[in-house]
Structures are given as C-alpha cells and as structure tokens.
Length: 110
Length: 113
Image 1 (cartoon, rainbow over the protein chains, first blue to last red):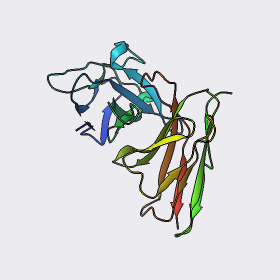
Image 2 (cartoon, one colour):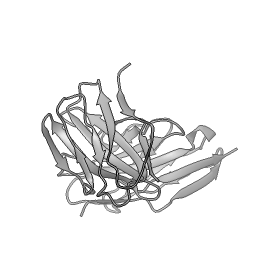
Image 3 (tube, rainbow over the protein chains, first blue to last red):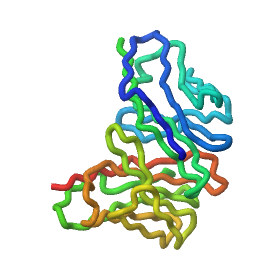
Image 4 (tube, chains in turn red, green):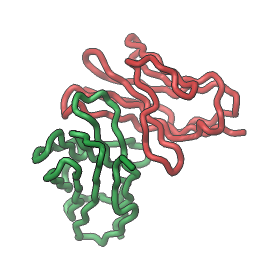
C-alpha cells in the first residue's frame, strides 16, 4: 500500500528553536517524496523535493529508506515559517498522482 | 497573469442540489487534478485527467463527476449523491513528464446547508 503518515497535527516551537516535522511513508520501490507548504491565505505550493537535495528557506529533508522517513528540518525556526506542511509521495499508478499526508500545522511563537 | 483560477471561492448549497466548481488554467499544463481537503485528513484525490477528453477516478470519486472538453478547463460537479460534500476543494495542474510539482488554485469552499 502507498501511504504517507504525518503523526503530528500541530507543532508549536519558539522562534530560533530547531524544527523537525515528521513524515513516514509506505511504498514498494524507490519513492519520490515532496514537501508542500500552505501559508495563511496562500495557495498550496511545493517547498522541496528529495531528488533535488535542495535547501529552501533553510529547510532540508533527507530520505531515509531504512526508516521509511522523510522528515523536514530547520535549525532555527522563524515566525514566517508558521504554516501548514504536507508531505507527499508520488504514486506509481493513477497518473503518478501525489499521495498526501494528513498535514502538520507549524506554529512559531515569538 | 498565469496560473490556475478556481471559482467560486465560497459556495453554499442546499441538500439535494448539484453544484459545479470551475477550474481554469493558462499554464498549458496537460494534467489536471481535483483534491478534497478536510482537517486532519490531508488532501484526497477525487478525479484526475492527463489529456483532453479523458479522466480517471481517484480515491474518493463517489458522488462527483468531471469533464475535460478543453485543455484549460476541468470542472467538478458535486452531485446530490455525495454524502458529505461540505469541504475545501483544490484544483491542481502539472506538465506532462510530470516531476511531482503540482500547481494549485486558491480553492473553493463548499458548504451544504
């Protein structure tokens, strides 16, 4: 079965603290994973994808096949990071659809 | 201004009525998708279309219908058969040779009274 699990509904941290948003997946084969972000009153948009191994807005995510995880990390959270974050897996059928996790709301307090 | 436009933003419907949500894109994207977003459940795929005049059911297609007569347009009809239609609906599109980056509209919130 193809599945994405984000165990935390809400994550609340103080500005400057490290952040880790958890994502676990279930997939047969080599997964393609993504993080999407939805800021308040804005569209859902791509934050980063694991194949690019990029860092966007200070966020990174490493694919750990052994633990089937793709956690999103940032060493020092900023207030503007407050948003809804979705982990997504590209499915191998249904037109390569994206399978989304339940989402984690990140709240960064001043 | 390129992008995906969904309308209306807010829609109220009485029980037993069908309602159609519009999704238009001028990005020249081949594939279009409809997702439903519910709190605590993430995004779930309703229907998708990879080319004109062709579409497939997603995971929760029951009670919904779509058409793809033009590349730019992918309207979603929420029928009276949909048991729990109150939700936030998101339309998305992507290029063929799909890299996983979906471009989303701003969404339509449907409330059944």
